[in-house]
Image (cartoon, rainbow, N blue to C red; front, side, top):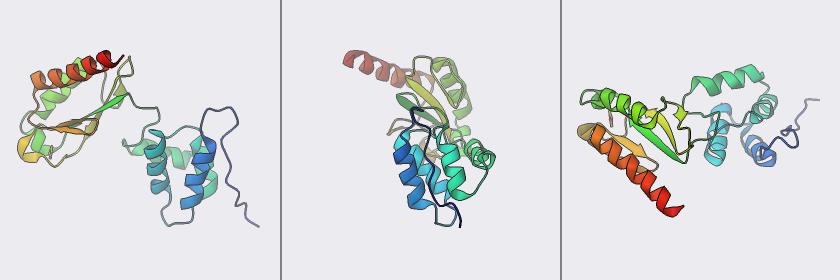
Length: 171
Ligand code: FES
């Protein structure tokens, strides 16, 4: 008889194991369950906790390496919690043709981190994105849920500084 129990993360691991197990159990029997499970875990936790990997692997009859391979293949999936604000800079073609590469370089310098990284103070995570539907008004970017068009280095600094000032004012 196959083992159908959903394993949970080790006690004391810090991972909300019951929530992970619930997500896995709800989707494990659907075709192509791995990606929907990973998306839901990231949506609910903000990243894919390491402890989730064996839980998913066992439920889907995959190896841990297979699950880990999918997580690392798609840059969308984070293995660490994101910063308090996610900055997404469009790297797609239309934005590239109007200066997105220069904006991307500037973003790295200004934030002091590379793409897929988080600033040392945990305030910003910098991520590439491939089209935000603003191709006619690029370079485009998002900070959190807010979309910004025609962003150059000066405007980038203003937007980031405004977020920093806002956070300081709330502290
Ligand atoms: S290419 Fe950047 S918004 Fe479409």
